[in-house]
Length: 283
Ligand SMILES: [Zn+2]
Ligand SMILES: [Zn+2]
Image (cartoon, rainbow, N blue to C red):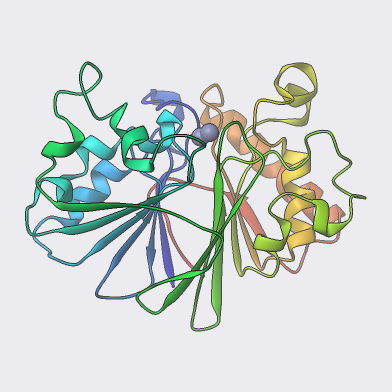
């Protein structure tokens, strides 16, 4: 299964010269589970470039949205397959307390925030709320679970032919608990992630930033991302949702720190690294 990172930045796009090496587009990941289906995780600004690649095909598209924060849906209107009447597109997302998914997305895809309305998208789009039961996309089994973030947020686990990817881009499992000692069944997202060959996980903040200002903002400090990844026993860990204030140089430092702490805590058996926009990785 091939996974391509189209956007790895968190919160807001950063098209700054000193942030282009890791990339400025917000969350979007494509998953090559099947030659006949396009599967996409989140619709941040990274989905624009991916959409250009998909023009001219009539394959069904499945977009799995983790939650409706802008950085995860901002690219929707610029995803070209939405403008192709021949394209069947299914948008999956979390259920909300009051309104259906389509209506909640329409708050962004409507006047005055958008020049066109969600009803006007030419593609054959359906919106589906993800329930507790696993479901199939092509030959892959998809499971989702509510995880700790701000607002209703899902993590996804996709399994095909014995290979497994878990995607938890916005996640604060260490909020209010000692992540090292909390029993596994009480750790947000851990059952979903356990044993995944590849884990894509939030590591937005340094430990210091987290301690000083950002506890409770819905994201992980590096230390918690590392503990979570070790307890999940993944073969490969991609740290994700880079803070908009972190330039390439500071991300290089974070990457070195992650590798050193990972080795120290006995994680040598697994690869760990920061997500880089444009990179394709084999699960
Ligand atoms: Zn986000
Ligand atoms: Zn978020």
